[in-house]
Length: 87
Image (cartoon, rainbow, N blue to C red; front, side):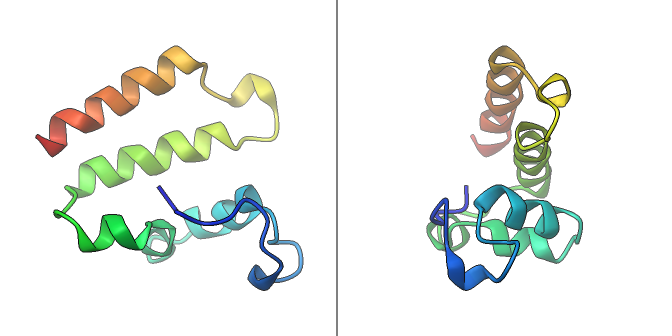
């Protein structure tokens, strides 16, 4: 979804890790656009509902407490739903 490196010191102190950087971006509606891999942004237009679902899944997957994260079945089901919006 991001095309970004997992660790990148240029993101700033405390944001070197991709998950930390994403948490900040997901809090701001305008920041969601910064999450997109440029290849996705320049490709076919993604419906906003698909983008929102992908962001929700990503946000769930980076929760600090493992109990708060979705299991793989939940991730697959959510992303399968995204594919329906893109067809």
